Image 1 (cartoon, rainbow, N blue to C red):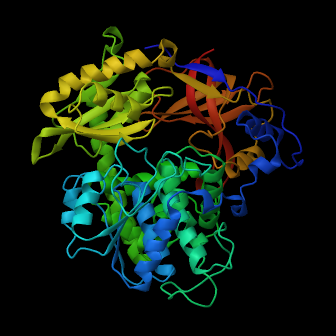
Image 2 (image 1 turned 90 degrees about the horizontal axis):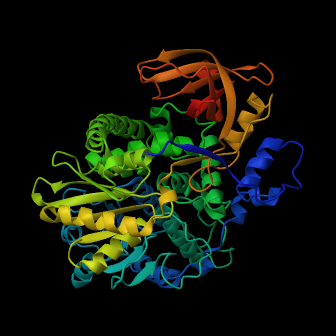
Image 3 (image 1 turned 90 degrees about the vertical axis):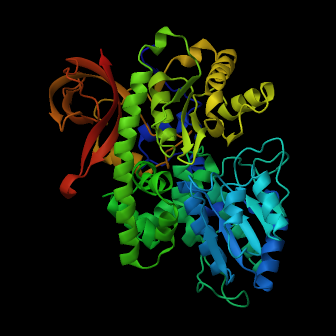
Length: 585
């Protein structure tokens, strides 16, 4: 493998018009991401996109209105990841707030029902609901929707995944990624699509109010639609923020507006009991919470339930208004997450042993399979190996104990290689080899017969070879360049934490500088704590690097790529460099 290369982001223009209170370094960071004026960094909720151009909303809203008028039973069919869980909670809470009286939810069990609105999930619904609304799934559920319709169930699909060659015969579908859809942002997560559907539904119930704002007013949950103040759907934005960050959708301007509003609710102490409990269980600070806390501390606790147990526990946590009950749920989720971490560590270690010497065998598209692996964790294995090898990876495990002859795969890709399109190409060349597949450019899932694994692995490598240019296989870490001498201050660290929100396609500020290693020590068994001296002015900076000690001391003079963060141990704040990469100078 080629060593990681540091490259500096290109500037896209000169920042202008910023107030003196915005640090010049932050202005340059924004400019490198195409944000050149304060207006482009204004994430007030009033600037979110209107739902009016999102296709399918009229049909979906009309069907929901009929269901509410006639008091139908409505069932929300979610997904077993964090986006699906938060989207389910948004749907249940939002519909109840808007006056629906009989709203329930169902989450498929990964090892019983499979993914999405499967025939097995539909057949398990007893008694059958009158209306079924999917969240974060359904665009590929051709068979599941057909079974539902055969049972007399009306179906609304809300999803954000890319459609396949055939769409399900549902009553209404809302998905910004359908061909011809005019919604300006294609980056909404599943929870965001559901939030927009609720905005459109409220606009029909309260036609005199503007349809493109989340709201400023309040209303009692469960109120029957009628005269009075309209329900405040902005109270759902903490859930929208969590699901959006967790699903790693690109944080375009509209998603940043949604995430920023949700983060502000959490920081202000106005989050739902479940999110508050999860943040506390993760030992993060509510007043200073940032998007990376949602992605790396809160979301994994919810995702662990869907990977190893039953995501209904996660949805129950998010729907609870009882603080004590929410805390009990959060503690259970944290315990499951610890189990997940141990299992993941052993599986990743095994996968790394499997790919030792991979650079000598020329595999470009990497497929891995181990019969003892847990199907709920293979996505994390694929992600870790993708990061190490910098090439697309698909990890496979037996679908379940009851299906020893069927495999489930989870794929993760690198920039420039659209993983779902690659699976579609394999499916076109060898029909029937892949039983089911779906996903995005960077992540996908699939299933196939165990006996076909070898044939699939060869086909995947062949497509990767044809598509990926050699330079794409070079791992690159982009930075914002050198942090000027004297700028590693607490004031700048605070501005960086409050700015953003940072995330997918709008990356956290990362600097690279030369340092002398004044001192270092090992924390625990694998972490490094260092004192780094800036040779330009002699200033010494506290630094930490996790999972970086492998028995060798750091270089005496080194180049480090790092984030400027805040160490708030025991309530005392101080700037600290969080190292992401070091190399000899």
